[in-house]
Length: 231
Image (cartoon, rainbow, N blue to C red; front, top):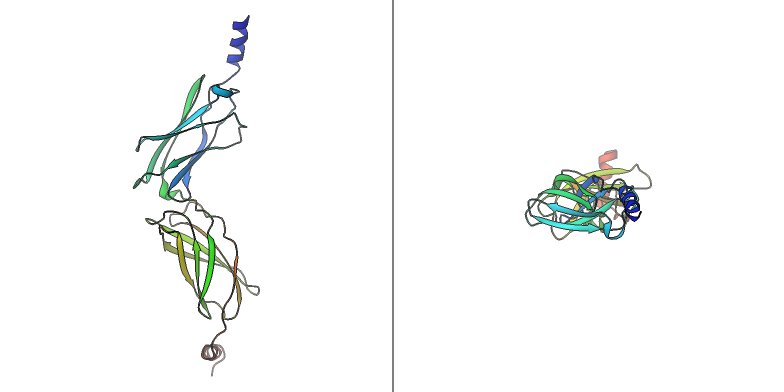
């Protein structure tokens, strides 16, 4: 009788589903995060719950993950430290429980799967009355790639303007660009978001930074008036 009951309970549970929607990307070219959906629940808990191992074949390194059963719409994630001078990663995600095993694979060039963090520490400094420098902090080891950043420029009396700039990545996370063709003595609001030149995803927008440009000099005012109205 006990044996039949055990067989019924055993048969009502499932081996692990094939991991769904496996995706691997990085925010800083230092650490890779791989996410997936576990698929159907197995109804196994405790020490019999499904465990996951993420194996990278080129480096021979792996990381393990184990947790309690979760709803099917919840994503799991594992972090994998990037290897020096390695760009291509061949991941196999193995799922295992006492009733069986399954796996999912993905091959990625991680320099093409960068989802940067939000730019922070936005600063504005004058160059002259119509140009400023815009600097910000973007954490990450981007010294070997180029970044594509988008600057949003707003004033109260004009339409929104977006400017794209391609800049060389750095390792110290500090960036600076010049923004010209502005109007003197005008309040501007700036925001920044970044991606890589090959483009995978935009970062989220930075916080807004307001700035009042300086007044034009008398000589500059004369040139502006002469340009628009003639002498």
